[in-house]
Length: 205
View 1 (tube, rainbow, N blue to C red):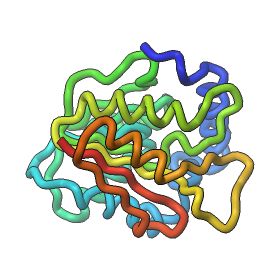
View 2: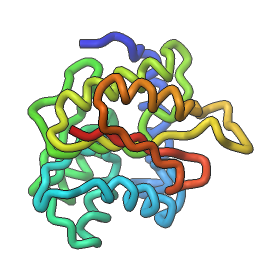
View 3: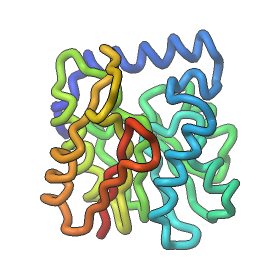
View 4: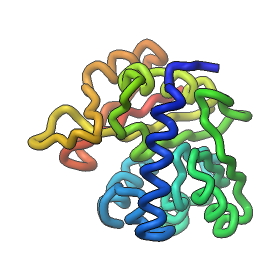
């Protein structure tokens, strides 16, 4: 599989999450993705692409399974699956979503097993890498995921259209991401309305 995402960067990201779990426990604070309201805004935008009942969903970077909780809250029937590089999150999801399937998995090393109606990535690959090229890593992630998507792929990320930047985070150029998405499929949506300084790219079959 692809070696575009260095092991050093993976270990750096893993260490950050493990430290947050140590400090905050298995909570939304450990994800460093903002409040429940902010997460709901992201999840609402991701869920807007759903057109199939009881769809199979792969949540890459599933964390504590908040996207499944959101879908259930909205009465959207789904079959939930998740990958994460953080073992503690996968243990949590296995306990709280017994009907789902969860794995500690790095898709750059092990790929994606099977195909899914929808693949969703929320707040994934936002850390600024030291050895890897963030933009190239994101593009490769898009390519890998879209190949395994039967209906649509939806990814949110930090935008370059911001009024403040953290040295720890990477901000993606929406136009470049859109251009690359169009090389994968003719059906692409770029949304910059769900959160002020974030955008979603959504690729459709």
